[in-house]
Length: 283
Image 1 (cartoon, rainbow, N blue to C red):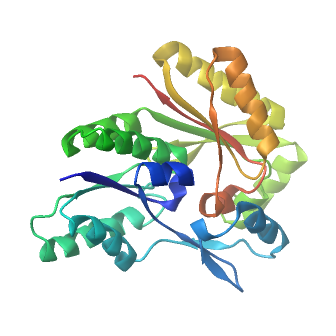
Image 2: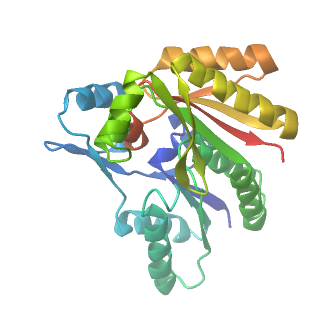
Image 3: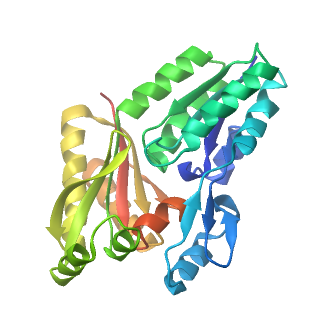
């Protein structure tokens, strides 16, 4: 029996990698007042343009239990095993819904093997463990080894980012209007990070350039203390910023960081112009 990987669309794994590694994606959805669509069915440029023109911030919704159950069943009905890794249970109900789908499916297929994991993050902090496990699965590694590998990566994963504007955090109710106004007036940028599955504030700096330098300083500290296994630059519809940060990483460490353009479900919460780093340390 082979092991097949299943994840959700907030992993933002390239289509070529999904096909090559036979990874199944269950999409989340985004909802405007006049239209809704699955995240993986819309172009990022179109989405962010529409969001900029909209008077209200769109909302996101998780996959239905039926969608996840169908993805699981396609695998187990062939006699294969499932390793499913989803975005943080503190950010979405997707993980909880997957547990419910697993319970239902085991009533129909009592011998099925379905492992469901909480990545405690999103974007490539979710995508990297999925990719690593999928490669190991294709190499014939057992499910237990894949779970151990993914859990170790999740433990050593880091995600830091700097929004360009506080407007989206304000509109989404994550900060107050007064805080956003004062922050914009003083050109203050929050350094945010994912901690135990939740977004938290690390500190504030003055200006976007200071924010990028702080991210690189955080990476430098991790590099010297623990070593770096993977580095991915993230941006939200800001390719120039992403390329500049990737160049900085290459010039400082000789590491070729890949670049990920964050999609609608995660991007709608912090807005275009955001830049960030996902990195996995060696220890």
